[in-house]
Image (cartoon, rainbow, N blue to C red; front, side, top):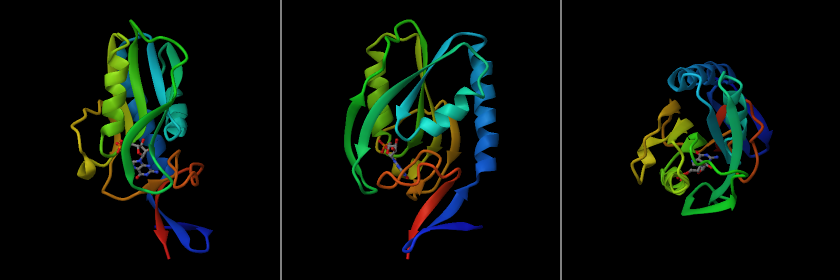
Length: 181
Ligand code: 5GP
């Protein structure tokens, strides 16, 4: 195990390497491609945390893809969920009659994704599926089906590969845990 020293009082311990992520993303892309059999799909990238994952995942899927973005906020500056899901930016086009896959960075309590699924279903898509890079089942508050899952992780606050801590660390190419000295 190696770590990067990013601030005097913090270090990031690697949990999932960039190589392991790349391998899993390729597998998820193949699975999505196989399940949709040449049909058009809309990938909905949930901002900001899933922008890196969605960019890699989109390039691992050989289907007629449309990509749209949905802005949400469920965390403040700290590491605890507020439990309140706020839409900060809506989709640019309707999704009625389309197969939709919501791309999430992490399903933690499940509140965000449950809220988004309910919201998107009101817009009459053909189907709504969920693809999440990470899942922390220990913290689930609502039951959510993750159709395509990258990794199940233990209950630790993670950063990197799009995930932040107070807006930092999104650019790390791997998933890590912040340790405070
Ligand atoms: P949920 O509503 O499932 O509790 O949380 C979903 C959102 O909370 C995620 O999309 C992510 O933005 C944030 N989140 C949950 N757990 C973590 C974590 O371990 N690290 C970071 N950086 N964000 C998290």
